[in-house]
Length: 381
Ligand code: 0WD
Ligand code: CA
Image (cartoon, rainbow, N blue to C red; front, side):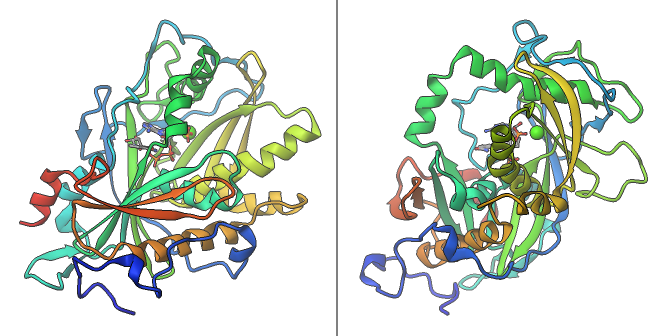
């Protein structure tokens, strides 16, 4: 119950027995009541254009257009000729979100700083939605580990992913087939989204994965005040649809389900990720295009995020939403007790591998430092 009043720069964490040094990810430990998770509120949005330039507006927001009931959408079309992909070697960290925070600071809740006359963000955690999704699914993840860099600055924890060595290797050794399959998801968006209300999708255009529309939401998980951003595929074109984020729609593609084993894997692994990703920002609908092995979408289904927990309940040994949320809750508490030093140059690096506990290490002025100087400077003035 120490709060954030006294940052003690020289304190050695390892000497304090009251500070836990690991966090278990065993699902059974997190089977408690569902924690308080406030309805997420959109506090703003931003767009990234085809050259990854930031705009403090919704210019990249698209409108959903329902495909035919028995569609035949060829997801492979245009892969060679009309595909511009984002350079994944460029690590953007939290930069676009930090740019958004600086541009909208006066509209964000602030509190007087403990040790200066400055105002600081009245938020505990700033991160990408995708990083929180990884936390939610951790107790059930058996394949891929993660690393999250955490910096405490102005009383707020900034959480930014670090690509693991294994992830880097699989990215660099990606097959042509896998690369094409990554295109399919974006191609499905092109078949089902229009740039203006009432307009038609343009499947003859270029698929450019630099373009993005991101929502910024605020919410609370137990005591943790969260501010995070996530990419949104499109919105309900009806102008009378409920306000954001309730009008947003997440688009997905998935292999057609033919065998009981395929259905089981879909419910156990894919629906878990879909649920976690859309539940976090309060996106109520997920529209899935099911494709055959040739990459043709042959059916389209709507999943309501709020009813996914009921769909998976009847499965034997299924995942539980409460485990996901309680693990995320406990990880954030763990990160708060560990990351005591308030310094933009210090990174607490949390690492997790399947079948292991979450561990962390501390790094000062290392390549892990991710809060840019421009952000630190402007927040201190
Ligand atoms: O590791 C990440 N997720 C990073 C994301 C690292 C650095 C930056 N970003 C940013 C990008 O600016 C991107 O616009 O995150 C934005 C997306 O963030 P998010 O919503 O938090 O990520 P997530 O929920 O994992 O993914 C949402 C969508 C994906 O759609 P599907 O339906 O496949 O889940 O964002 C896309 C992808 O279309 N996406 C990305 N786009 C650009 N860079 C990235 C990425 N690293 N990861 C996912
Ligand atoms: Ca999507």
